Length: 277
Image 1 (cartoon, rainbow, N blue to C red):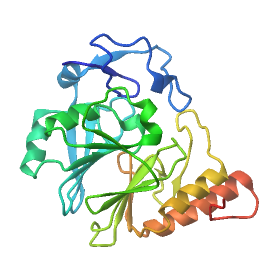
Image 2 (cartoon, rainbow, N blue to C red):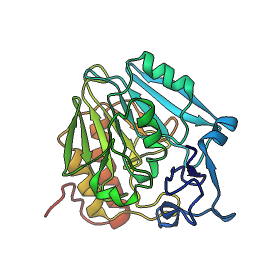
Image 3 (tube, rainbow, N blue to C red):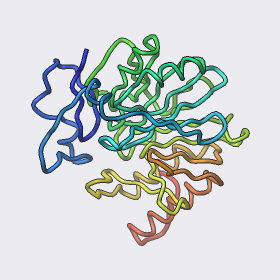
């Protein structure tokens, strides 16, 4: 069925085949309703104007992105894993060519999503691969606009997923999470961050925001807690949520020095890299 999709944030709804009166994700202060107003599309219409572009980022890592840019413009990742493929984050569009390509690669074992802005057409993707489970953090369950039996809301601070680990960081959303894959980058590990951490344009740091479009920063305490959440994990590369936002070396050190820089810039006081009770 052709459920409505918000063109501003890319979220698919299932209240009915008629567009809802408003998009709660766009009306929240972390996103925005465009000046031209709320506009809706659907999967069939997207097929006629857009396509999915695949890019091999590294061994076992492929990014997928809608072209031309649609809604927030994020990239998703097809991650080849020892216990099956994982789709990290999601897109509003799904095409037959990508379904066939993923099927030829062994299908999907799981879909995992960093935060509500990237839920997009998650249940559509799940259905295309035999109702593969979709993992989101329970702290963000209120933002789900299209649900189904395959949706799994995990709780707590970490969740083991097919030799990968989902880590709740908070900050951007209460349940904002990252995915750690230790087998990638020749066993040195990779961290997939969505925009729980935003890779900066110089590719030397990451940064942190409650809202990127509305420029609402996080507190130093919240950023310390993000660092604390990932400190136990080693990773060489950091894959951000947008095209070319990738850090290829010393990822763990990059996060540490980014936290120190953020706190120094926003608070100007003593640097406290750890999250205290």
